[in-house]
Amino acid sequence: MSEDGLPPLRAVIAAHGLAARKGLGQHFLLDLNLTRRIARAADLASGAPVVEIGPGPGGLTRALLLEGAGHVLAIEKDARCLSALGEIAAAYPGRLTVLEADALAVDIPAALSRAGQTTPAQLVANLPYNIATPLLVRWIKAEPWPPWWRALTVMVQKEVASRLCAEAGTSDYGRLTVLAAARACPRRLFDIGPQAFVPPPKVVSTVLRLEPRAEAPDAATMAALERVTAAAFGQRRKMLRTSLKGAFPAPEGVLESLGLKSDARAETLTPADFLALARRLGASS
Ligand code: SAH
Image 1 (cartoon, protein in one colour):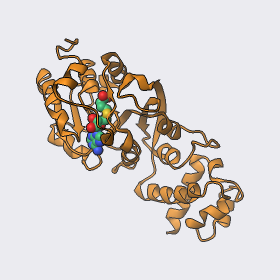
Image 2 (cartoon, protein in one colour):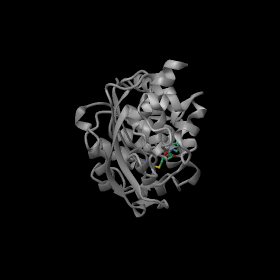
Image 3 (cartoon, rainbow, N blue to C red):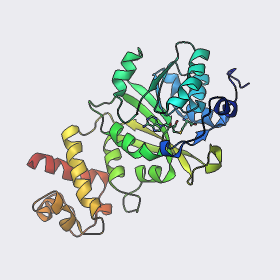
């Protein structure tokens, strides 16, 4: 038995036949000490309801409940996991709602409301690696703003964390960095090696935390920012006066009027420079 009176995760996996499936990005964390460390990196004391994506056999779910989450809404696509998750729900009456769904298709605020919970919530998850980036982009683009989340505490592939937290001028710096910086402050917390997972993934994972900026660009500016960064980073080796032709009819004049060098490359512009370009694009279209 574990501290929560539930069987160890290895026994849960064996009892419910939860052999990991690659197509679902399944890499399970079986060490409750490790999942508790992730849970403690979230701000459970805030009392904000927790949303978890991909609970799987429930290692992180159990840690969140043990560490004091008032309510967890856990969204899992793999129906095989539901019976194991049901046992956790029974051990914590009224504190765990399990939703069988594809996280990419769920309206999270509506699901929270159906579960009797209010927003803002906080999201804590060991994200399925194959959809981590689209999920993060979706939450960064959430409308209305401030969003339904007050913090995202997520484990992702280290490479995704590096892109989210990159400095201008580095090879990791790109569209994801600029979109995230416009609306949130991403912070790396700690790394977890492949051997902590069953089965081990090929790469190191990083736990990171994003908090939304109160003052952030609106939906139209975010759409313009996506167009500008797509053009600039789509041809990141080219000079901006060339690559930005995908966004502006005459990029040279626009760059000059913003005090930016037209022979520079995308990665030399700061997130604030990109935002200035997006505002110019928004105003002209
Ligand atoms: N949180 C667990 C499992 C992480 S593995 C742990 O830390 O051990 C990723 C989990 O996400 C798996 O349970 C997988 O079935 C689930 N998953 C994959 N794609 C999903 C999707 N589109 N929507 C919801 N869950 C998904």
